[in-house]
Image (cartoon, rainbow, N blue to C red):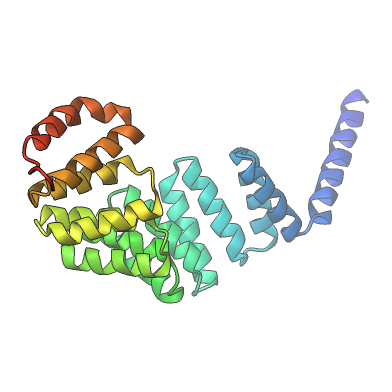
Length: 248
């Protein structure tokens, strides 16, 4: 008799839980998943997105957010699978292409990443981050012309994109085009006035141009904003000061 009562209780609870599930819409579950995701409760978010997808198997945003959840749980293959499903249900889903590219990028699958970043940029021509990431890949591949082209596009779309100027300056610096390097380090500094690394590198570029006065000024600012640089720059500053011509 007790076993029978227990079985009845279990059935009642199962019915109640089922009713609760279906009383929530796919959108309700999705929104709850987003809240859990934003709170970094990824396991709870995963459960919510699973239930949302069970109710609406063609819900691209649910696949997208579940893909992000998988990515944060370091399940890259599952993340790629869900971003792909999101795209299959919404072919112009630029953010899904971008996020899938991110997974490829950090898995060192640079050609796949480049293809997806490019698709994201084509779908959303104002997508500065996509152009920046393409530039980074071209730089890794030593295709410096394409890297500069995409860093420039990034800066055009987002004039305050400090890293685009800095990375572009580094390419010019490495190719010994010190005037263009200085120009772009200056833009990086204009965007971020306490950018110690940019002062350091611009100072190096001035040194190569034998403009020791500006070199010393920049190196000192690099130390001002990052005191750790004093050990590597103090001797350079002292040496450069001996080369400054009187009255310059």
